[in-house]
Image (cartoon, rainbow, N blue to C red; front, side):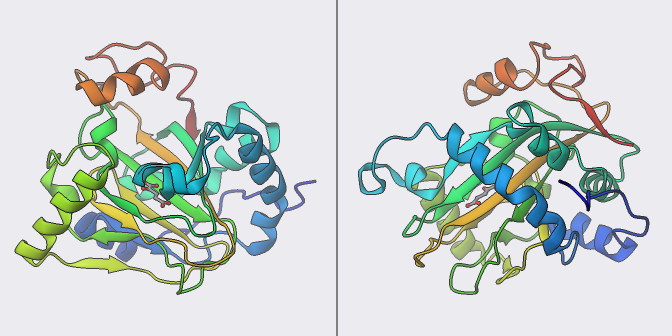
Length: 269
Ligand SMILES: O=C(O)CCC(=O)C(=O)O
């Protein structure tokens, strides 16, 4: 089925894009893959995600986090075609270039489906949830359908990855209001890449503050994310919010050990 297979290509990410990523904590790579390539994987990704959704409440009965998206983790463990997508050398090579790492591992993947009428994704930092060393992780965010300007893609606070954990807590109305006030008070610069086409992807660092707008359209906004971690990254003593990740995504490894169990395979080289 996969005639075009997301194989590795050289000269994938330029030095100037790496510098942008290091300075801002985010970057958009247009045309990382082609619509044809993504189209080959999309049916399996969407079907596997739909089968994995555990949310049963209607949209209007959920809290802000619940309205932001339906999320399904580790599609790579559920379906062989999804595994090929998540393990694609091209994506992992891009992640390794941006992290300036000789080798990267999978942390986990997630399908994030913002439903028609779905709410905004509150401001947050991903690494609040991850007991991992600073500067060692990044997320690839790749839409499976074109995203119009009306729906919009992620919003990032440029340079915020350098702050480490700002202790705004888990994704919630509280994290959103606290961070929005800080952005306004400090006149922080917020960037969005706006409309995105299938094959484009954004990458953001683990501590980059980000959010996403609501979906006012009558079409779903399907996105795949893959989270990478640089080889050699140490596991930290977990905070209460991080205990889940320590247990489920890190193969029972302990603080002080490096990431590297069977759940976190090397994806590049
Ligand atoms: O897709 C979204 O709405 C939010 C995604 C996000 O927060 C992430 O990938 O870290």
